[in-house]
Length: 68
Image (cartoon, rainbow, N blue to C red; front, side, top):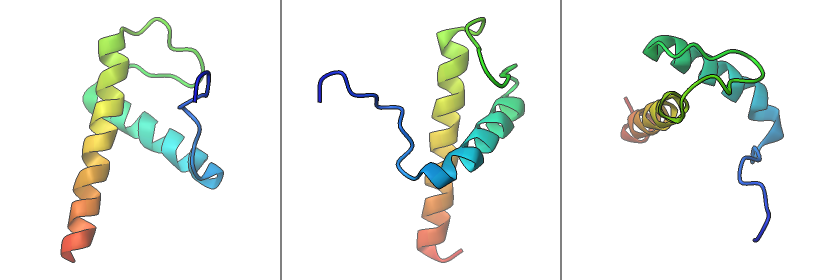
């Protein structure tokens, strides 16, 4: 869909948990992410947070699917 926002949370009740997870990941990989505006960070820094979040979510899902 043209002009749609792809950043919408599919389950609005999960937004707070995702925000907390994002901050934990940023801290874990050393990215100085703050609540609110982060325009001072590079796209590499911001992208690394999102990429690492996806990696951790996939790892957790794989563990869950394998019964471990």
